[in-house]
Image 1 (cartoon, rainbow, N blue to C red):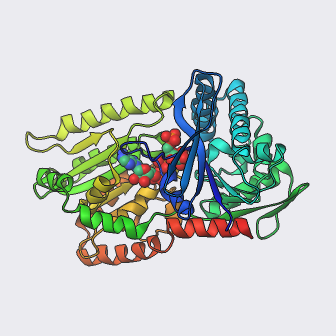
Image 2 (image 1 turned 180 degrees about the vertical axis):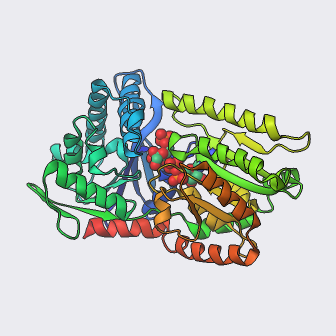
Image 3 (image 1 turned 90 degrees about the vertical axis):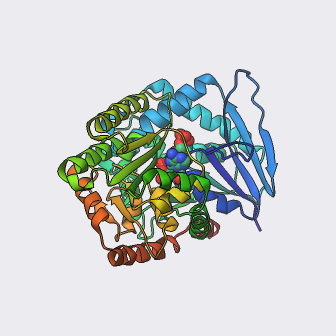
Length: 454
Ligand code: ADP
Ligand code: F6P
């Protein structure tokens, strides 16, 4: 069997302590269940000009990483990836801060990755590259003579062609996708938009199966939604129900209902509107005052990007306003923390919650929604409130689907969730669970690797 090589900017090193927020690592670990290589950025900044590949073995998986220089980090990661591509692909043209030197830094880091990775590859390896940081990596590998099967998966949304047109030198980036044998997107909508951009910007005509014929071969675009290890997560949640952390949480609630939100502190997640919606719930539905607490775990993320710093200040202010207005000496309505939590603790907390709030303004998939569902007790489940603009909404119709741009709609959904009878909660959750237990991390990896082998 061919060795699988995973490449992603962020690598979940087995030596790393503690929790790190982010969906990618959760979904793709399964691809390496029979062993393989995981290659990417170490997360470190190096001052030396020599930048060796460092390797760590864990079971049958080798983790190989390189550092970035300070300049690469600034231009590639903070700059082009997270100040141009991230806002663009989340439909936020107004937040784009494009600089030509960042674009150069982005291509240069992709070249460095390609040069280091090419030396590690065996002729039969199947190479699966992930996410918006590494779009040109395939083309750079081809330029170095790599002939292996190359696949790429975009974890974030793709935008309609009219938005993509705003990207300076977008044509070069779009052409880079065609170096891959398979390009995976999270949903049918993202795949349609991708193929449409290819048509409009590159003037190419895909066939009905998303096959694009290029001068060097073919490239196929597929929709392949990412999932979680639902069984494993459900078992973890059932166990964590009795953990000291969950007990402490429950005893602090003294019988009140818990509303939970778990996100990276990112402007795509719609947190300010969520806070507004919760404040409005306490204003418009006073019967819930002192009866409900909202815990928002918003793990700090990309703190060197200025938009993220501004969001942090905005949320601090909003949380203060809500608590200042409604708190009682024995009740804090909004508990807001910016430290990440371990997966076990999260699992127990999801299970303890009556309402899961997942209201991104745009999201490739959103695995928190799937974790919340998998963690529920089917006898007395909670209710998921889900943004129609999360990729997960394509498949999770029995959630309370909201437009996250309208805080009043979120408020009404929280109210509806809090008063929802048990049989309706059970009915909705049973259907949602069926979906989350079918489209899993395992099916995601299996389908992609099968498409890549075909
Ligand atoms: P993204 O990849 O944009 O961060 P997802 O919802 O797809 O969004 O994935 C987020 C992943 O990170 C989930 O597995 C979730 O459990 C984890 N996560 C998010 N926020 C936190 C947090 N505050 N603490 C620990 N883990 C978190
Ligand atoms: O899908 C979004 C994503 O970029 C993932 O690739 C990653 O797991 C997560 O966000 C965390 O972001 P960062 O690597 O910038 O900390």
